[in-house]
Amino acid sequence: MVPLPLFKLAALFVRHVSKYGANQIKAQAHEHPKFRAFAARYGQSIHQLNMRLNVALLRNVEAEMRAKEKAEAPTVKTKEQVEKEEEAKARQAKLEAENPEAAAAKRKAASSSSSSSGGSSSSTTGEKKKPTSVWRRKFRPLPEAKAVDLFADVIGDAFILGVASAIIVYEYWKAAQKPDQNAERIKMLDARLEELTRREQELARVEQERTERYEALERALRELRDPKTKKPLLPSLQTPPTPTAA
Image (tube, rainbow, N blue to C red; front, top):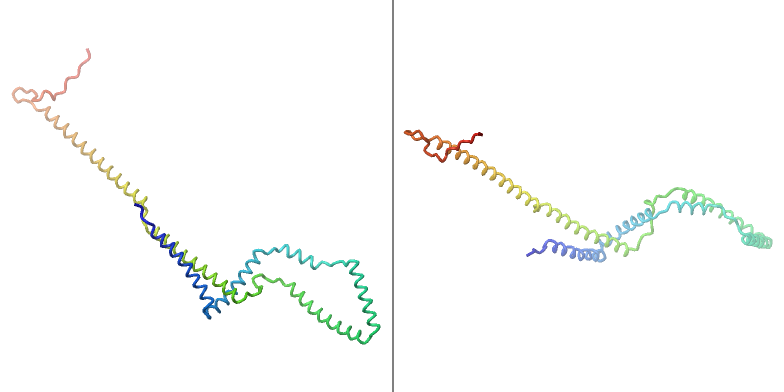
């Protein structure tokens, strides 16, 4: 009978329960005031990091350079634009002729605004020329509820991932501590082979000693002779004479 994989069933149960733990963490992030403030603050940090990573990965420097060159390139006015500007100048000259005092005040205000705008534009152009790093850019922050949701999702997923990683590490450690059945079987077979080899050598040695004793006994029996007749007591053990060639 095949045993039930209790450890795998327990690991599956723990993974399933960890999802409820992650949901509980998300609920506490919305309900607990201090945890909510903590989640909102670090949720904004996660949002900024996520946006910077997305911009850094999806950024196309060549397209930005082409768009910048296109925006800085001088544009040629069309015929309709030239006619509209001439009509506007004619109307402005007519109004100045009718009311010279208002026109003078208007020109003075326009000159002051143009000087201030020129200074600001020069400062802004100077600022635009400075390369801004993606990692220093500040993106629009999320609403508090969305920041809390983002932080809760990240913490919940991290909790589930941590539980799964702990189970995998424990399973790997348990498998490493468990003896290898194939290695144990090979070791047992090697021991049996050595034992059989030793027994075979022992049997060969005993057989060799027995053969030597039989040969010595046979030689002794051949040498036994009757003291009176001087003939062998066991003629059957005597070796027959070798036939000579005629």
